[in-house]
Amino acid sequence: MLPEVRHSKMIELLNQTGSIKVSELSKAYQVTEKTIREDLEKLEASGILKRVHGGAVLVESSSSLLPIHKRRVRQQAEKEQIAASACRWIEDGQILLLDGGSTTLELAKLIVHRTLTVITNDTKIASVLADCQQIELCLLGGYRRKGTYTIIGPSAIQMVDELNVDIAFLGCTGIDAERGISVFHRDEAELKKRMIRASKKTILLTDHTKFDQTALVSFASLKEIDLLITDAQTDDEVVARYTERGLEVQRAT
Image (cartoon, rainbow, N blue to C red; front, top):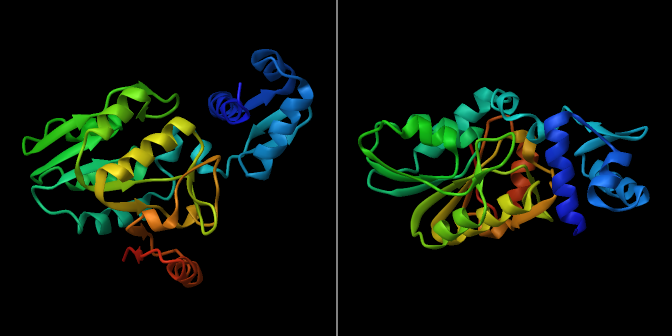
C-alpha cells in the first residue's frame, strides 16, 4: 500500500472514530509500528492530527476533519457571504458544476428559482435542487465518501470528462501560495482536477480559515483558478500576497 493511500485511510478512520492506535493500524495495513509512527509524524506536521501515547487523536480545530454535520455550521455567516457574491457571476441558461461542500450548498440555495443546468457530486445539493422545475439537475455517479455527502470515484470522473461546463464552483481544504490548492483525499483531488478541465471558468470558494493551509493532496496551482471568492474577514495582507501571485481575489461584502 502506497504511503499516501495509507494516510488517506488513516484520515477516514480518524474522522469516523476521533482516535487511532498505532498497534491496530500496524495490523490493518500490514506495516511495522515504526512505519505507522512515521506516518503519524507527517500527518501531525500538516496539522491533521495530534499524536498521543500509542496513537493519535483528531485536531478539533481542523474543520475539514470534523464530521459533515459539524462542518456545515462552521463559519456559517462567512459561507453565506461568499455564496451571495458567487451568485452574481451566474447568468440564466448557464451550465454550472457545483463541487461538494458547505459553501457550494449555500450557493445552491440561492439559485433555486434560476433557469440553469446544474451538475453536482453532492447529494445534499441535489436534494435542495431536486424539486426546482427550471433547473436541469445532474448528479454524478459513484460512491459516497464516508462522513460526507460527496460522491467520488471513477464513475464520477468519467462523467465529468464528458462535460463542457460554463462555470465550476469548487471548494478546498487549504490554499497555499507555494503548494497551491489541496484536499485530504486523492480521489476527491482527482475529481476536482477533472472539474477544472471541464469548465470554461473556475471559481474557488473559500473562507478566511483556509488560507496558508495545506492538506494531503494538491489538485491545482493558483494559476489554474480564474477567481477566488472569500469572506470579508480575510486580511488585506493575505489578499495582497495571493494577488501578487497572479490570483484574482474577491472579498464578499
